[in-house]
Image (cartoon, rainbow, N blue to C red; front, side, top):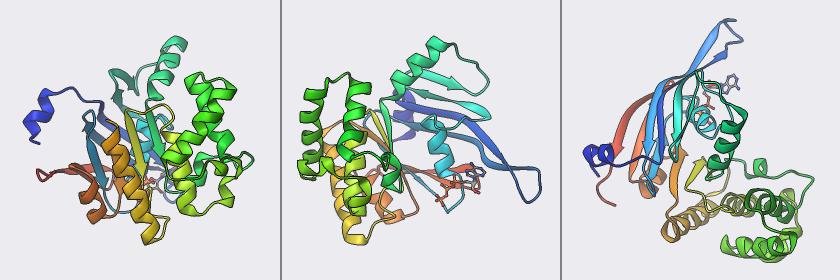
Length: 251
Ligand SMILES: Nc1ncnc2c1ncn2[C@@H]1O[C@H](COP(=O)(O)OP(=O)(O)OP(=O)(O)O)[C@@H](O)[C@H]1O
C-alpha cells in the first residue's frame, strides 16, 4: 500500500498531534511521555507500533482507548473526535462511549480484563448484557459460543482468571474483547507474558480473527519478527515521538 492510497481513503482511527506529560519524581518537573504523535489506521488494516521499552507505546494506546487524557492533540475514531482542548457535553460523552465500544483493548496481562472476584463467564456476560443489550438467558448461550470461538471449553465459564493458565486467560480476554464485533482491536504486547509455544497459538487465534472479520488491529510490540508477520504497516517510536512509518507491500 502506498502513502497516497492511505491519504485518499478515510481512516478508521486518526490520531493527530497527541502530547502527554507526567510529573517527573526525579526532577520534580515534568516528563514528556508523548510528543506530537500522529498515526492512522484504515478499516480492516493491521498496523504495528514498535519501539523500545518506555518510548510511550502504551501511553499512546491508553489515550486512543480513552483510558487516559492527552494534554494536546486529538483522536478520531469512526468519525467522532476527542480533542484535548475541547470540553464535551454529557450527551457528547454518552455518544463517544457508545462509539468507543467499537474499539477494544487486549493487554499484556490478561487478568487485567477480568475482576478476580468474578468468573470469566460472568465477566463476558456482563459485557453482553450492558454493552449489547442481551438478556441473561441468551447471554449465557453467547458466552459458550464466544469461549468456543477462542478455543476454550464452554465449561471454563465458571472458572476465575487466576485458575487458568496465562494463554487460556488471554484467550478468555480475547473472547471478552470481541463481544461487540469491534472495528479496532488494540493489542498491547498480547503475547509477551506467555511462553513461546503459547505465544504462537495466540497469534494464530488473532490471525483467524483477522481473516474471519474485518477488524482492524493496532498491534503494539517490541518484537520485530512478530510485528512483520502480522502487520502490513507499522510506526516506529522513540522517546515519545513517532519516528518513521514502515510499509510492507508483501501482504
Ligand atoms: N501514569 C504514569 N505516571 C507517570 N509516568 C508514566 C505513567 N505512565 C507511563 N509513564 C512513563 O511514561 C513513559 C512511557 O511509558 P509507556 O508505558 O507508554 O512506555 P512503553 O513504550 O509502552 O513501554 P513498555 O514497552 O515497557 O511497555 C515511561 O517512562 C513511563 O515510566
